[in-house]
Length: 100
Image (tube, rainbow, N blue to C red):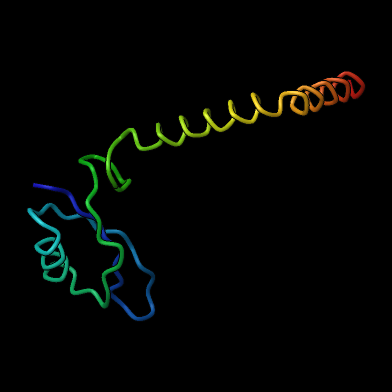
């Protein structure tokens, strides 16, 4: 059974809050929330990992690709524009030495 979370609002004047249900599918989770809480609306119904309050959108290593792309991009900039990068680095070093 999967864990689902949703933002619901039960009163016109109240604020919304997060609820969690365990269900076999998203449709059943929505029905369970409607049965238990009788909400005015249900927003952002999503499956979450067990014991976590963050949504699981596709794997634990999703940020790894972002870091790899960032590293490759930085390496490309340094390799192609190394005189500028070196000049900026030297200017920054001089600035730091002078401001101490």
